[in-house]
Length: 302
Image 1: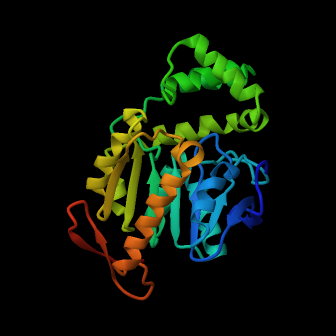
Image 2: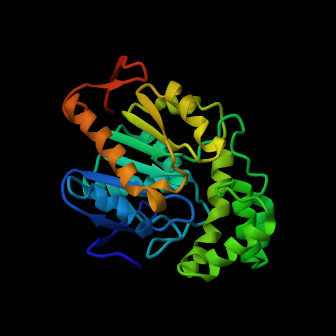
């Protein structure tokens, strides 16, 4: 992987037999990192190194990336959850961080099993149609026609991840993203986007399913991110039985992987330390979580 120094690579076999590549840093209690859409494991190297002094950080190379297997015809969020659980079991890890679409996957890991700590940054959750994917059909058609620059411009405009809205400027940025440094791997990842966005749309709901997450959860967002990404956080915080949320000043959607990895690493460290101080990381007993109002509620492990 480009830019990776001293990271340890491993391959875990998923339930369907696919290879899942994992990049690991550091030593100590394990933390699994689940990357977002159009992201590779190495994009989270700075975040991993910020945590590596106290933790072994295992960054998953998700389906369709690097040496990991393809999405496959039966792909869905459950495929990614299966992969994450396989990595957790292989490494003995009980803590999870997910970014963007990886945050959606992380929440569904939390539905599958109770973990010691769950942290997500702007998860790709749609509540009551909050995630507008009306651009997806055009994007998919452009991608199929091999009009990659046009497809990327459609993606950037549709998601609103950049502060620019004019088509010529978005086209120029897209051209740079696809033809500049790192453009080859960006082009290689683009075919994974339709299935991932389709899963966000398919899972749109009133959010009540996430009441089944018993893990102590921290929901993070950035002040500069689009409202549809941060607006679901307070809703989720009231639905999850043991959750709190924080909107971080000055940060945008790419804080964990590009702009502020140190800030996100600090938030994760604080969340983990608070759990240790309050006795959450105790594999033998009934645990307690903290709600927004610091109300203590029991969390029973499965």
